[in-house]
Length: 329
Image 1: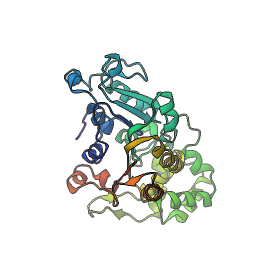
Image 2 (image 1 turned 180 degrees about the vertical axis):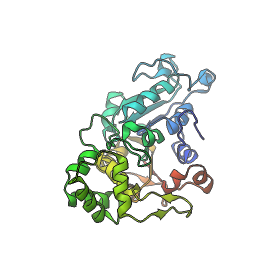
Image 3 (image 1 turned 120 degrees about the horizontal axis):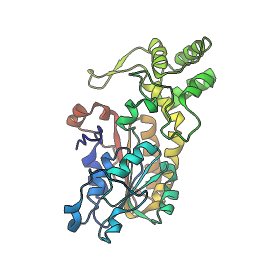
């Protein structure tokens, strides 16, 4: 389901909806709202049929933060979407898009999900969803400094409140620490070579842009190709992914989400997570298996779901996605 107004194609949307089963009366959490690709489809299904004809989700208007529009109509039959994102720019965009839908939004990392639900005065929920990828706009807008396709400031912070950025890592961290980060977070086989090149270059002057960094990495890494052998993967892809993950603390945040999410679900509630990297998927798989063994949760997808060929052809960035589902007994 393409949403042209956002420029973002939500990955495995139909599968997400099938397992979350959003419906009037339910409370669903989208931990990674982004531009609202998945969240919009979820929220539309939380609207009770009697008011569905009045919903105009894409009409922009002023919105009061953290208010459930459905509640203002005293329509208690509606469900509720709780949306989290630690990118305030995307969150403000979503608040406008969802003006007439039963949704509340909170500037928070999904590691803070329990605090957000406390603030929303919401108890246990029916479903929790997290898409661990980044939004298309984050990849290409200059403010984020995430793309190696065009010159951008070397930043990579998704939440501007954070102090650490990629420029500091590249220009101040030691060679060994940089190499370990690239290898541990992105399985970069040439991590030592890249780290050595970075340290050599910064002796001549600071590395300030994504273009400069990508050029250095290209000298160290031979090009590779995608699964379909026609999609060229840029040599700097793994380096940039590792830096983004390090800057934003993505692994420890995911670990905490996996720890607290089962305690926030109602009996029968589901946890749906889409990952795009083998390390993240491994953490999800291990956490789901452990919860299943202890009886806290039940694994719904013994093998991860992946996009079909048609989706990959339409959206090549979806090719590495894996979706896992867990259910509370």
